[in-house]
Length: 250
Image 1 (cartoon, rainbow, N blue to C red):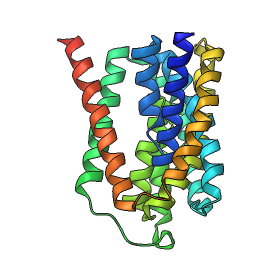
Image 2: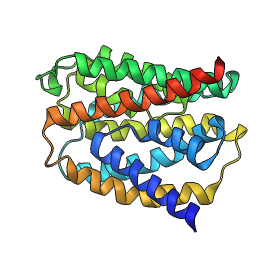
Image 3: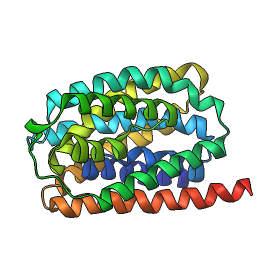
Image 4: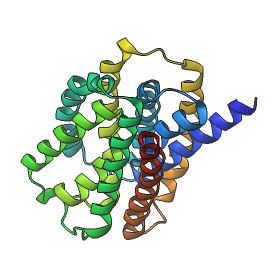
């Protein structure tokens, strides 16, 4: 009973982060499954894709009511990302669990620094470059398959800083792309991992409730505050993962 309650709280928190920030669910899910639930990094990677993909889908439905979804960008970015995620999925098994988590942490620190240091673009989504959109989609797709992340903590910065979407629209659009990439990445991982479906179901169901609450929060939080919250969240979690895993190599 105690473990179920812990799993439920974690699932709700992951859904809340996804619904509120449009990403970050994967970088919370993988560490939670490894450090709290006790799964291996490889098993956590696969389970994360299911949990985050399902919650992102539900979050996108909630955001649709707020008219914050840019479907052309989502389909272009997500379409190429799905192909890249599928073909890069098997690469994670070539690395040790510690190395995988260190790479995960370094990527988080770079992304958070870019978001904190860069200026928020004011251009509308109609000014974006399709070449940049597609190139960004491929890059995020590769990292999605390799590190087992839905990619939201990469997608939101890419949509804001490179594509030029307003932050609120980037959050909603990111959820569509996360769901697409998660499906593709999962297909590449299924053949080599045993899944705990009861655990995954708990995370998914409680995550739906969190995603609903998170989508509501975006209505009352200012765009700059939303952006800063996302960057600080990624920075803190990345620093923790890096310190913890570098110590294991020394």
